Length: 408
Image (tube, rainbow, N blue to C red; front, side):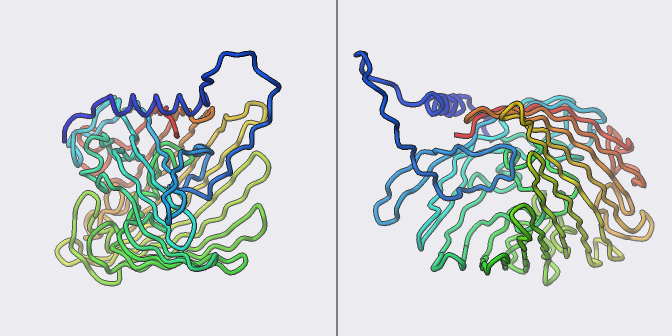
């Protein structure tokens, strides 16, 4: 893929500066008494979903599309810097790993038509997917490695407020973390996220009845192009500050696709999440549990395997300094089997375990944001050559990350 060229990022930054500064006055006459301006109406919820602490532009550009109604155009542009120890020595996916890297982590445009009978969403651009415990793939290689330059997009029919059907390239129903860096509490996704699918092609139906929200999907799992995955999500709103969700998904038959975006074992798994979310004043607390099981796959493993993990995601919004948040994530995950019994490698070798802690101070002012992150991963029970470092034998990895950009 050709190197990333900077004019695109310059144009995006210029657009954000204009949005942040507001309209320019053309007249220089003595101003008359100010007339309170009517604020623009807040648009319906726009995608991609953002769990915070970063917030999308509250007044994105909009265009009247005639019979379709109003269409909103927004986006993200961000730069990224990372340094780490115990660098992988054997390369990964598109390029060898590095001690330090700088990159354009996001340059994406989002097009939303979020209301009416016919709705749609499209996400286009380049991106990286910073992720704990695995090498960083630069955004110039990201689309070719992962989900393509058209990362997500679908058409949605919503005949009523409580029922809708979607078809296209859909975000997953699984997990407590979304796919792209700006969507989550932390810049990097965590160890549990590594077991989940992120984007799939397929159909999804959604139904809401009072406090209960249901979604079912038939899709191709980890973007395998084999339509054999089923998924169900059920979320119950306990009260205005608490929700609980159960999500289950899995492959209904064996498939043999094995690529960077479609790992063989994870694409044949069954996976279950139990997620609780609670907000109280400046605090958001989200613990969740995850279990996966992978069947024996002839030619690849001699027995079945599984993982069990838990994570706690916490955010504190600093009340005395608007825009400052302090997110923290703590995780633990274990896998079954051993290097000698033919179990699949689902982590850092069959039977390995790992834990992580990630701290991500975040500040946002209007459309501008900046985040610093410190992360540490420690593994045990690893198989030689399957962990960290030049020979794959180191048991831990530390990272320091900076990400800054605009949500326009």
